[in-house]
Length: 586
Image (cartoon, rainbow, N blue to C red; front, side, top):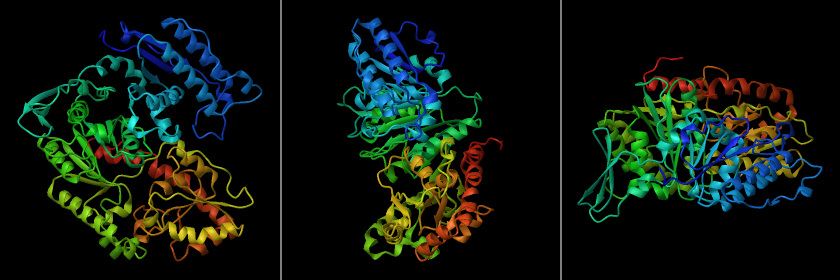
């Protein structure tokens, strides 16, 4: 494989990295070091920061650089800026990143980058934003770190992040760079099409189309399948939305409990936030049939069970026309192709895509869908929901929903609970430890969450000095847990009648959570739900009551972590997925 670019291997210093599988490949290995005792609690990255670590890394990087091409040492972060202080993770990152970039610039040939470990992933992630042709492979610990508190401002269109178990990473690398098994057939057609045929992937291209070989090989190849824990057993594939990182969280929880599970994410153009995924591709790339064929060969063919999110296609199998990553019609054709291929297929609905507005309006007293100002939007959602339910009624697929209120809208569905990573269960600041209690609201969709009512009640109280009101908008998902731990009260939605990811995160962090959860939805938990009831008509009284009777509010918050751990640490989600793939309960 002489055409392989030299590999720059970044790894956490404590990891023993075996280079034997890469014999014959030009490799430059760099150990990433920090000093854990200098943790800075104010950092959102969740990684230790250290001036010594930055200098140590710089020295090692330069030493390795000389192995490729002699060069002088360059002080990219002057030492006098670090004298007598512990730098933030941002400063440490700046020093390390610049030194690694110096190494790459001095290499004779362009360097691909392989990253193993948590701290090394921080560097690789930022390098990736600057050079999209890099190959970045992180260990599972790094993927978990990214889900719970990783770096910010990574452009979605340049994202190339692949995750493999550290133990098998280097063994898999040579095969990662090979062309996937795809049969290319030239056909008399106007558009390209990806289809399954007897266990292989066929890419049909118009007779005059360019050779798709380079795209099939890929700038950042998708990984080979994980070694199965149970050879010949079930393999689960989830995709391709990964809303709130849930597909990745479910597959992680499933893998930890004996299921060979993978997830694919198609990142829509303009997406501001991106969650980790086993395979990730931008929407603009996904349109290329060769890219989709590569995904199908690597991920769909080995899968025995496929869980499609929100009726979105994973590889657009069987669709002959113009393709779009959010097309219900394309997803329907793919579900039919998967069923024809003998796959067991399920569909998981996250919320708004299947929450029929007219049905919600008839069931929930504070439904937002009676707002005449948004009538056009509600009509579009009604139409979309009708299309989805028509597909579910026609095809023999299993149905799953992520929250118990969605059982009202998807007949015959199974509840697949939200899963949170371990980092969400870190304790926050002691409640009511400041003069003014902090009330936080971070809506993902203000009009349906009742944010106007929150603003109407909380803003005047903030201006009067009664409380500190924080409305979060545009905050990266990996930063949110830090903000939650700094608040006293988290206000979830007031109108939909259920609870979602924000409420689960607030409970996990031991915060007082306010929100409207209908009585019949609360009953589905089978135990008391520690969310203080508040709706648009009672919010002001509830807020003032929390401030007046702090002991009662704290008592409710203290129940949150145990409740969230029981329902949302991944065990219940994995149990549902084990049932889906035909494995017995743990």
